[in-house]
Structures are given as C-alpha cells and as structure tokens.
Length: 415
Image (cartoon, rainbow, N blue to C red; front, side, top):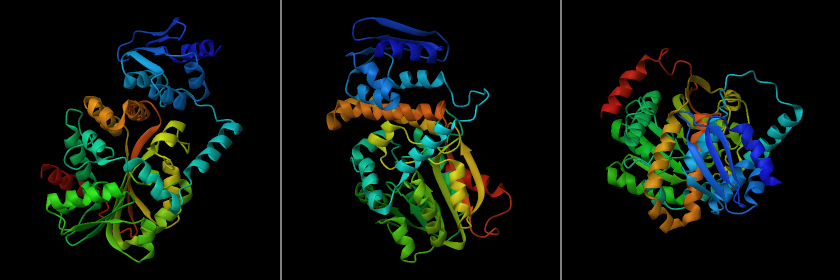
C-alpha cells in the first residue's frame, strides 16, 4: 500500500528529468521525461518500509533512510536526487498563490514558535552540537585561508571558493566603513576568519565571541599564525552577558549567527546590539533568510544539524530591530550565492569521502551530504536566501549614498 501511494505522489511531483524507483519487491516505477538541465536518478529501496517512512515525513524520512543505507542511490547522487525533486516545484514558480488555510497558518506559527525557543541556557548546548564535532571536518570542507562557514560572495561563478570568501569578507568590511582605531565586535566569530581579515586590512582591534570551545581554540591559533593576535582577541561568552557588563564598540559584525538566536530572542538580540553599539557606530548582520513569510525548520535539520536553529523572514528581523530604533540603512538580498557556496562544500566533502568516513563513519557522511544537498536545493529552488542588513543608530553615521562601498571593496579584494 505504501509503495502505491508513494508512486502516486512522486508521479504527480516529477515531470522534468527521470526518477526511477526500484521497490523492495523488485518492481520498477519510472517518473518524468528526459529534460535538459534536470538529472536522471535511480534509487533502490532496501526494504518495504522505506516508502512508508518517507511518506510519514518526506524530509526526515528520506534523510534517515539514506543515512541508514536503506535508500540506495544507484544512478546519480544525493545532490542530484534532491535537486531533481526540488527543481520540479520551485518556490518562485510564477503561478498565482492561493492564501493559506487557517489550519496551515496556525500550524506554521505554532511550529515556528515551538522550535525557535533558544534561551540562554540552551544556546551553548545547541551551538556545541554542531560546531564541536571537531575542526577536522570543517578544514576539509571550507576555504583554506579564512575557514568561512557562511555564504560566499560570487561576483562571477568562475572563481574559487577561496576567492568567493575573500570577496564576501571585503563586501562586508566595506559596508562597515571602518575608521582607524575602531573597536570591532564579531558576534559568532567562528574560527576567527572575519576578525583576522579586518585586522589584516584595517587599523582596527577586533573582539570575537563564540559559544563553541572548539572554535575558540582554533580561532586563537589562527590569529597567532596570521600575526594579528595583538589586535584580535576571542572570548567564550554570550552576547547578552557582554552587553550586561557594559562593553561598547564602534562597529559590530555578525555573520551566520542570527540563525541560532530563535524568534523569542530576536528582540533581546537587537536590544543587546543597540546597547553594545556606540551611537555613531555601524553594524552589519549577515544571515540566512526566507524569501517569504515566517515558517519552520524542517525536521531533519532540526534533529540532526541545527537544534534550536530558525531561519528568519525579513519581516521578523526588521520588526524586532525597529523596536530598539536600529535604522536599517541598507538591505541586500543574496539569492544564489549560498547555493554556489554549498555546492563547493559538497564537492569537497565528496572528494574527501574516505577521510570523513574513516573519522566519523559512513552514516555520518551520508547525513552530512544529505544536509548539504538539501540546503543547496533550498537556495536554488526553495524559499531560502541570504540577507545583509546594515544598521546604524544615528542617521548621520554613514554617507547618504552607497558610492563609498565600491572603491573600498575593490581595494580590499585586491589586497
């Protein structure tokens, strides 16, 4: 019964590209037609419960059966499979949109609120779940110089991951409009790449904060190797505690951290930032975001990748920052940049498959590549993007046009 329902659902979903399914009893179902730009994928179900598990929760069920080796890809790979399914139903399909029903709206709102709670007590645990699995995996996957675990910036697609991440750092640094002697706070500093880049290219001092012990140790090591440890420091501290002790900064940057905050803490986050930022200061927030309204994180990501994480809609973000009178002086939507970044990470993980499986096991490798493939599809065909929001407290803090950005960005990229 599950197999028949599965085939009917997939038959309605896949029209472009070819998707073949070999069920556990040996029967083969074929969907779609060969189409340029769409992959041809063939999978095998190792037992008769795979279809049932996927139907119960498509994202979680597909992820877990793939992790367990019960969903076997015989032609193509997991990136191709998820790309095929997502590309057949793109978020920006251009058709008329019917308003969601009451049940859908209530379920979405309650689900988002439930999963997004990230009080101070749980924040450290949630961060540790993802970032304290060991630095070796990230060394294999990320750019070699700055280890940026966030969306790169791709002026063109014919550049390397390393060049795209340098371009991202320069893009953000230009938006900060750094001045000699500035004190800069990096909230969610990762392995220190942003802090190191700013210290290398501007006469500033940078304080990076994180809740990951693994990141803290490597960030300090990286700053020492880069020769900037006299102007860069790192702390294992929550941004709320830093605001409470009265620290103040000329510039604040936060890249890829806001996704961990949780909706109930959004206003707290921005209130802390407004407290930490001097009146004439500038802040740059770089975050994954939703192209549409508020939603909820899929069950697979919530369970295995980012417990406590939540991707905000732009409306949610601005509504909370407005309450503390932070002025959104510039907003940029990066639509495809993260998809290209994720594909580069995926390719590097696949290239290091044997090393990753030896260190973490084959199920982990399948879990990780499923996560990267799903995230890629979310940015290529789904409703995800990246937002860069520049904030000021005083309307006179920055030039009234954006002309100042291009020259500084070009200089930083060239260096």
